[in-house]
Amino acid sequence: MILVSMAFAYSYAGDVKYASKVKSLYKDGSDKVVGRLLPTAQVEVLEQKGDKVLLRIEGYAQADKQVALYFVPNRRILNAGFSKNADVEFKITKSFKESESKQEWVKASVELWSENADLVESVEPLYKEAQELFGNCSVCHALHPPKEFNANQWPSVVKSMKSRVGYDSNQEYLVSQYLQKNAKDMPKDK
Image (tube, rainbow, N blue to C red; front, side, top):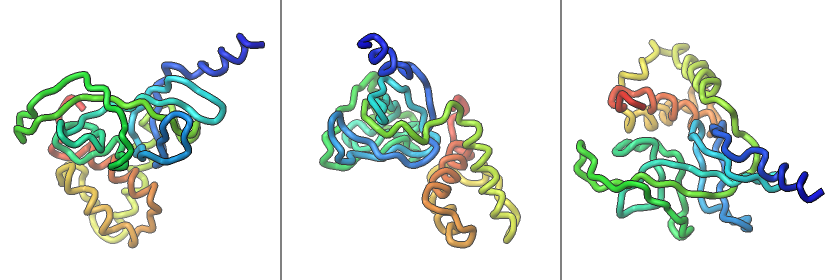
């Protein structure tokens, strides 16, 4: 009986997943939200306990401001954002000066809990959904190619059109993430 429970608790260990919606993040044993995971963010499932999973979230943070993990340095593409007083532990794997902005950045990860829902095996269906939602923009005007704007411009463009296309908040984040990750100023290796 104990072996079965242990096998079930770790059945998802090592799986790579992607958030399909905005997800709340918690510290171990707490119901207090300490942050949010954004759609399309890649995570590694480390452990499962009941309806919760322990996630490793990787990304980049400004060296002196560890309240967010970004998809790449020097772009406001959030993987996860954290409450200022949450005291989330960043595990830093690399420190460097970003060549474009000359700012100090770190590559880091956090391990936090979330509900075992709205995690998918592949990011491609999320991008397909985002493309279809983005296609609604062509009802009013010619569709802007994703490479027309840079990554930091897309969120305000999407937000300004949100009420016209009827996006809910999760759809707004999904479309923004897709457009940001395909923007004209994204590093070629991402």
